[in-house]
Length: 342
Image (cartoon, rainbow, N blue to C red; front, side, top):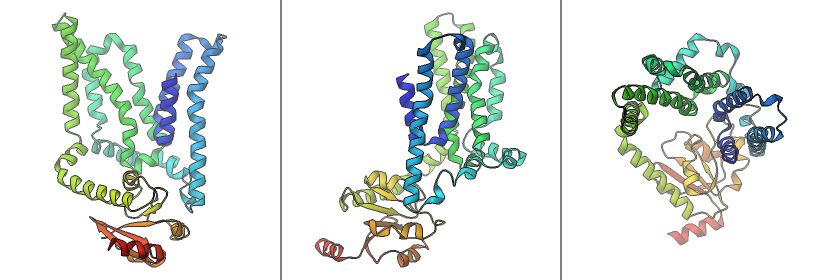
Protein backbone atom coordinates (compact mmCIF):
# COMPACT_ATOMS: atom_id res chain seq x y z
CA UNK A 1 0.00 0.00 0.00
CA UNK A 2 2.84 2.36 0.87
CA UNK A 3 4.60 1.63 -2.45
CA UNK A 4 1.33 2.17 -4.33
CA UNK A 5 0.72 5.56 -2.69
CA UNK A 6 4.30 6.75 -3.23
CA UNK A 7 4.26 5.59 -6.87
CA UNK A 8 0.94 7.37 -7.44
CA UNK A 9 2.26 10.61 -5.93
CA UNK A 10 5.42 10.48 -8.05
CA UNK A 11 3.32 9.76 -11.13
CA UNK A 12 1.10 12.81 -10.62
CA UNK A 13 4.04 15.07 -9.80
CA UNK A 14 5.97 13.91 -12.87
CA UNK A 15 3.21 14.32 -15.46
CA UNK A 16 -0.44 14.03 -14.59
CA UNK A 17 -1.64 13.40 -18.16
CA UNK A 18 0.49 10.26 -18.48
CA UNK A 19 -1.05 8.92 -15.25
CA UNK A 20 -4.43 8.28 -16.87
CA UNK A 21 -3.83 4.74 -18.26
CA UNK A 22 -2.57 3.62 -14.85
CA UNK A 23 -5.53 5.23 -13.08
CA UNK A 24 -7.88 3.28 -15.36
CA UNK A 25 -5.87 0.13 -14.72
CA UNK A 26 -6.01 0.67 -10.95
CA UNK A 27 -9.76 1.30 -11.13
CA UNK A 28 -10.22 -2.02 -12.93
CA UNK A 29 -8.15 -3.86 -10.31
CA UNK A 30 -10.19 -2.30 -7.48
CA UNK A 31 -13.52 -3.15 -9.14
CA UNK A 32 -12.43 -6.72 -9.83
CA UNK A 33 -11.19 -7.07 -6.26
CA UNK A 34 -14.47 -5.69 -4.95
CA UNK A 35 -16.59 -8.07 -7.03
CA UNK A 36 -14.36 -11.09 -6.47
CA UNK A 37 -14.19 -10.69 -2.71
CA UNK A 38 -17.72 -9.32 -2.32
CA UNK A 39 -16.35 -6.87 0.25
CA UNK A 40 -18.96 -4.20 -0.57
CA UNK A 41 -21.33 -6.09 1.69
CA UNK A 42 -18.73 -6.65 4.38
CA UNK A 43 -18.11 -4.30 7.26
CA UNK A 44 -14.33 -4.24 6.88
CA UNK A 45 -13.44 -0.61 7.43
CA UNK A 46 -9.72 -1.31 6.98
CA UNK A 47 -10.19 -2.30 3.31
CA UNK A 48 -12.21 0.86 2.60
CA UNK A 49 -9.49 3.01 4.19
CA UNK A 50 -6.73 1.29 2.19
CA UNK A 51 -8.51 1.74 -1.13
CA UNK A 52 -9.40 5.36 -0.32
CA UNK A 53 -5.78 6.06 0.63
CA UNK A 54 -4.42 4.46 -2.56
CA UNK A 55 -6.79 6.51 -4.75
CA UNK A 56 -7.29 9.83 -3.04
CA UNK A 57 -3.93 10.66 -1.40
CA UNK A 58 -2.01 10.73 -4.73
CA UNK A 59 -4.98 12.40 -6.45
CA UNK A 60 -5.20 15.14 -3.81
CA UNK A 61 -1.47 15.87 -4.04
CA UNK A 62 -1.72 15.88 -7.85
CA UNK A 63 -4.58 18.42 -7.74
CA UNK A 64 -2.65 20.65 -5.31
CA UNK A 65 0.36 20.45 -7.60
CA UNK A 66 -1.70 21.49 -10.66
CA UNK A 67 -3.17 24.45 -8.74
CA UNK A 68 0.35 25.50 -7.73
CA UNK A 69 1.76 25.21 -11.25
CA UNK A 70 -1.23 27.16 -12.61
CA UNK A 71 -0.49 29.88 -10.07
CA UNK A 72 3.19 30.01 -11.13
CA UNK A 73 2.19 30.24 -14.80
CA UNK A 74 -0.35 33.00 -14.12
CA UNK A 75 1.99 35.24 -12.10
CA UNK A 76 4.72 34.67 -14.70
CA UNK A 77 2.48 35.89 -17.54
CA UNK A 78 1.83 32.42 -18.97
CA UNK A 79 -1.89 32.17 -18.27
CA UNK A 80 -2.37 30.66 -21.74
CA UNK A 81 -0.60 27.53 -20.47
CA UNK A 82 -2.75 26.90 -17.39
CA UNK A 83 -4.70 23.64 -17.15
CA UNK A 84 -8.02 25.42 -17.64
CA UNK A 85 -6.82 27.16 -20.80
CA UNK A 86 -5.51 23.86 -22.21
CA UNK A 87 -8.58 21.69 -21.61
CA UNK A 88 -9.58 21.57 -25.27
CA UNK A 89 -5.95 21.02 -26.24
CA UNK A 90 -5.71 18.03 -23.92
CA UNK A 91 -8.99 16.27 -24.64
CA UNK A 92 -9.78 17.29 -28.22
CA UNK A 93 -13.33 17.34 -29.58
CA UNK A 94 -15.87 14.54 -29.94
CA UNK A 95 -15.79 15.05 -33.71
CA UNK A 96 -12.04 14.50 -33.61
CA UNK A 97 -12.35 11.34 -31.49
CA UNK A 98 -14.81 9.65 -33.87
CA UNK A 99 -12.98 10.44 -37.10
CA UNK A 100 -11.67 7.27 -38.89
CA UNK A 101 -8.97 9.40 -40.56
CA UNK A 102 -7.69 10.55 -37.18
CA UNK A 103 -7.55 7.00 -35.84
CA UNK A 104 -5.64 5.97 -38.95
CA UNK A 105 -3.19 8.78 -38.17
CA UNK A 106 -2.88 7.48 -34.59
CA UNK A 107 -2.21 3.99 -35.97
CA UNK A 108 0.49 5.36 -38.29
CA UNK A 109 2.13 7.16 -35.38
CA UNK A 110 2.08 4.00 -33.29
CA UNK A 111 3.85 2.08 -36.06
CA UNK A 112 6.44 4.84 -36.34
CA UNK A 113 7.10 4.46 -32.62
CA UNK A 114 7.67 0.74 -33.06
CA UNK A 115 4.19 -0.29 -31.84
CA UNK A 116 2.24 -2.20 -34.48
CA UNK A 117 -1.19 -3.28 -33.20
CA UNK A 118 -1.74 -5.64 -36.16
CA UNK A 119 1.54 -7.42 -35.46
CA UNK A 120 0.53 -7.72 -31.81
CA UNK A 121 -2.86 -9.15 -32.83
CA UNK A 122 -1.20 -11.71 -35.09
CA UNK A 123 1.12 -12.69 -32.23
CA UNK A 124 -1.86 -13.19 -29.93
CA UNK A 125 -3.57 -15.44 -32.50
CA UNK A 126 -0.44 -17.60 -32.58
CA UNK A 127 -0.64 -17.78 -28.80
CA UNK A 128 -4.20 -19.15 -28.75
CA UNK A 129 -3.18 -22.83 -28.41
CA UNK A 130 -0.95 -21.97 -25.47
CA UNK A 131 -3.48 -19.73 -23.80
CA UNK A 132 -6.64 -21.75 -24.44
CA UNK A 133 -6.45 -23.41 -21.04
CA UNK A 134 -5.93 -20.01 -19.41
CA UNK A 135 -8.69 -18.11 -21.13
CA UNK A 136 -9.67 -16.18 -18.02
CA UNK A 137 -6.10 -15.08 -17.30
CA UNK A 138 -5.57 -14.18 -20.93
CA UNK A 139 -8.67 -11.98 -21.02
CA UNK A 140 -7.45 -10.25 -17.86
CA UNK A 141 -4.06 -9.73 -19.51
CA UNK A 142 -5.82 -7.88 -22.34
CA UNK A 143 -7.12 -5.26 -19.89
CA UNK A 144 -3.94 -3.11 -20.19
CA UNK A 145 -4.61 -2.89 -23.95
CA UNK A 146 -8.15 -1.66 -23.29
CA UNK A 147 -6.77 0.87 -20.78
CA UNK A 148 -4.41 2.14 -23.49
CA UNK A 149 -7.21 2.52 -26.04
CA UNK A 150 -9.38 4.32 -23.46
CA UNK A 151 -6.51 6.69 -22.68
CA UNK A 152 -6.03 7.62 -26.33
CA UNK A 153 -9.77 8.22 -26.65
CA UNK A 154 -9.90 10.53 -23.61
CA UNK A 155 -6.70 12.49 -24.35
CA UNK A 156 -7.07 12.20 -28.11
CA UNK A 157 -5.51 15.50 -29.15
CA UNK A 158 -2.37 14.89 -27.07
CA UNK A 159 -1.80 11.58 -28.83
CA UNK A 160 -2.68 13.12 -32.18
CA UNK A 161 -0.20 16.00 -31.81
CA UNK A 162 2.66 14.54 -29.74
CA UNK A 163 4.30 11.26 -30.69
CA UNK A 164 6.11 10.96 -27.35
CA UNK A 165 2.84 10.38 -25.49
CA UNK A 166 2.87 6.76 -26.66
CA UNK A 167 5.57 6.19 -24.06
CA UNK A 168 2.76 6.44 -21.48
CA UNK A 169 0.92 3.39 -22.80
CA UNK A 170 3.92 1.38 -23.98
CA UNK A 171 4.54 -0.27 -20.55
CA UNK A 172 0.91 -1.39 -20.43
CA UNK A 173 1.14 -2.90 -23.91
CA UNK A 174 4.38 -4.60 -22.87
CA UNK A 175 2.56 -6.20 -19.94
CA UNK A 176 0.14 -7.95 -22.28
CA UNK A 177 2.86 -8.84 -24.78
CA UNK A 178 5.15 -10.23 -22.09
CA UNK A 179 2.36 -12.33 -20.61
CA UNK A 180 1.46 -13.77 -24.02
CA UNK A 181 5.09 -14.45 -24.95
CA UNK A 182 5.89 -16.15 -21.67
CA UNK A 183 2.85 -18.42 -21.85
CA UNK A 184 3.54 -19.27 -25.49
CA UNK A 185 7.14 -20.33 -24.91
CA UNK A 186 6.27 -22.01 -21.62
CA UNK A 187 3.52 -24.05 -23.31
CA UNK A 188 5.74 -25.42 -26.06
CA UNK A 189 8.72 -25.88 -23.75
CA UNK A 190 6.52 -27.92 -21.42
CA UNK A 191 5.65 -30.27 -24.30
CA UNK A 192 9.32 -30.95 -24.95
CA UNK A 193 10.96 -30.57 -21.56
CA UNK A 194 9.39 -32.00 -18.41
CA UNK A 195 12.14 -30.53 -16.22
CA UNK A 196 10.83 -27.29 -14.72
CA UNK A 197 14.19 -25.59 -14.22
CA UNK A 198 15.36 -26.21 -17.78
CA UNK A 199 11.92 -25.29 -19.10
CA UNK A 200 11.99 -21.95 -17.28
CA UNK A 201 15.53 -21.17 -18.47
CA UNK A 202 14.63 -21.84 -22.10
CA UNK A 203 11.36 -19.94 -21.78
CA UNK A 204 13.04 -16.83 -20.35
CA UNK A 205 15.81 -16.99 -22.97
CA UNK A 206 13.20 -17.16 -25.75
CA UNK A 207 11.25 -14.22 -24.31
CA UNK A 208 14.40 -12.10 -24.00
CA UNK A 209 15.45 -12.98 -27.56
CA UNK A 210 12.00 -12.03 -28.87
CA UNK A 211 12.00 -8.73 -26.99
CA UNK A 212 15.49 -7.96 -28.31
CA UNK A 213 14.32 -8.48 -31.90
CA UNK A 214 11.46 -6.00 -31.40
CA UNK A 215 13.70 -3.57 -29.50
CA UNK A 216 16.39 -3.64 -32.17
CA UNK A 217 13.78 -2.85 -34.83
CA UNK A 218 12.50 0.20 -32.99
CA UNK A 219 12.97 3.36 -35.12
CA UNK A 220 14.17 5.40 -32.14
CA UNK A 221 16.89 2.85 -31.39
CA UNK A 222 17.97 2.84 -35.03
CA UNK A 223 18.10 6.63 -35.15
CA UNK A 224 20.16 6.81 -31.98
CA UNK A 225 22.69 4.28 -33.26
CA UNK A 226 22.87 5.89 -36.69
CA UNK A 227 23.32 9.41 -35.33
CA UNK A 228 25.53 8.53 -32.37
CA UNK A 229 28.13 11.15 -33.31
CA UNK A 230 25.46 13.82 -33.66
CA UNK A 231 24.04 13.05 -30.23
CA UNK A 232 27.50 13.01 -28.72
CA UNK A 233 28.33 16.45 -30.14
CA UNK A 234 24.94 17.90 -29.25
CA UNK A 235 25.02 16.61 -25.69
CA UNK A 236 28.63 17.70 -25.34
CA UNK A 237 27.84 21.30 -26.24
CA UNK A 238 24.77 21.28 -24.06
CA UNK A 239 26.63 19.92 -21.05
CA UNK A 240 29.46 22.43 -21.57
CA UNK A 241 26.84 25.19 -21.65
CA UNK A 242 25.21 23.91 -18.47
CA UNK A 243 28.57 23.77 -16.70
CA UNK A 244 29.31 27.37 -17.75
CA UNK A 245 25.95 28.56 -16.40
CA UNK A 246 26.51 26.76 -13.10
CA UNK A 247 30.02 28.22 -12.75
CA UNK A 248 29.09 31.79 -13.67
CA UNK A 249 25.84 32.26 -11.78
CA UNK A 250 24.77 32.02 -8.18
CA UNK A 251 22.50 29.23 -6.96
CA UNK A 252 19.45 31.53 -6.75
CA UNK A 253 19.99 33.20 -10.13
CA UNK A 254 17.36 32.68 -12.83
CA UNK A 255 18.08 31.97 -16.48
CA UNK A 256 15.93 32.35 -19.59
CA UNK A 257 16.35 29.76 -22.37
CA UNK A 258 15.10 30.27 -25.93
CA UNK A 259 15.09 27.90 -28.95
CA UNK A 260 15.03 24.68 -26.94
CA UNK A 261 11.26 24.16 -26.79
CA UNK A 262 10.32 23.07 -23.24
CA UNK A 263 13.31 20.77 -23.00
CA UNK A 264 14.60 21.11 -19.45
CA UNK A 265 18.06 19.65 -20.09
CA UNK A 266 19.86 22.98 -19.82
CA UNK A 267 18.40 24.18 -16.49
CA UNK A 268 18.40 20.63 -15.11
CA UNK A 269 22.11 20.11 -15.75
CA UNK A 270 22.94 23.69 -14.75
CA UNK A 271 20.90 23.26 -11.54
CA UNK A 272 19.21 26.63 -12.04
CA UNK A 273 15.59 27.70 -12.25
CA UNK A 274 14.63 28.78 -15.75
CA UNK A 275 11.93 30.23 -17.95
CA UNK A 276 11.76 28.71 -21.44
CA UNK A 277 9.59 30.94 -23.66
CA UNK A 278 8.26 29.67 -26.98
CA UNK A 279 8.07 31.78 -30.11
CA UNK A 280 4.27 31.76 -30.20
CA UNK A 281 3.97 33.31 -26.73
CA UNK A 282 3.40 37.04 -26.63
CA UNK A 283 6.57 38.99 -25.94
CA UNK A 284 4.98 40.62 -22.87
CA UNK A 285 4.93 37.17 -21.25
CA UNK A 286 8.68 37.21 -20.73
CA UNK A 287 9.74 40.85 -21.09
CA UNK A 288 7.65 41.77 -18.04
CA UNK A 289 9.84 39.57 -15.83
CA UNK A 290 13.14 39.83 -17.74
CA UNK A 291 14.77 42.08 -15.14
CA UNK A 292 14.66 39.22 -12.64
CA UNK A 293 16.82 37.01 -14.86
CA UNK A 294 20.60 36.83 -14.92
CA UNK A 295 21.50 34.96 -18.12
CA UNK A 296 19.67 34.66 -21.44
CA UNK A 297 20.49 31.64 -23.61
CA UNK A 298 19.74 31.78 -27.35
CA UNK A 299 20.59 29.58 -30.29
CA UNK A 300 23.07 31.51 -32.40
CA UNK A 301 21.44 30.35 -35.66
CA UNK A 302 17.99 31.61 -34.64
CA UNK A 303 16.46 34.20 -36.95
CA UNK A 304 14.51 35.67 -34.01
CA UNK A 305 17.56 36.41 -31.90
CA UNK A 306 17.88 40.08 -32.96
CA UNK A 307 14.14 40.63 -32.35
CA UNK A 308 14.42 39.28 -28.83
CA UNK A 309 17.49 41.33 -28.02
CA UNK A 310 15.64 44.46 -29.15
CA UNK A 311 12.82 43.99 -26.63
CA UNK A 312 14.78 42.54 -23.72
CA UNK A 313 16.81 44.69 -21.29
CA UNK A 314 20.10 45.97 -22.73
CA UNK A 315 22.29 42.93 -23.24
CA UNK A 316 25.90 42.06 -23.80
CA UNK A 317 27.14 38.87 -25.43
CA UNK A 318 29.14 37.12 -22.72
CA UNK A 319 30.24 33.97 -24.54
CA UNK A 320 29.38 31.44 -27.23
CA UNK A 321 29.36 27.73 -26.43
CA UNK A 322 28.64 25.34 -29.27
CA UNK A 323 25.36 26.38 -30.85
CA UNK A 324 24.42 28.73 -28.02
CA UNK A 325 24.98 32.42 -27.31
CA UNK A 326 24.98 33.49 -23.66
CA UNK A 327 23.81 37.04 -22.90
CA UNK A 328 23.80 38.95 -19.64
CA UNK A 329 22.07 42.20 -18.67
CA UNK A 330 24.44 45.14 -19.08
CA UNK A 331 24.97 46.98 -15.80
CA UNK A 332 27.85 48.13 -13.62
CA UNK A 333 28.17 44.79 -11.84
CA UNK A 334 28.32 42.82 -15.07
CA UNK A 335 30.78 45.22 -16.71
CA UNK A 336 33.10 44.82 -13.71
CA UNK A 337 32.62 41.06 -13.90
CA UNK A 338 33.58 41.03 -17.58
CA UNK A 339 36.63 43.20 -16.95
CA UNK A 340 37.82 40.79 -14.28
CA UNK A 341 37.38 37.84 -16.65
CA UNK A 342 39.26 39.63 -19.43
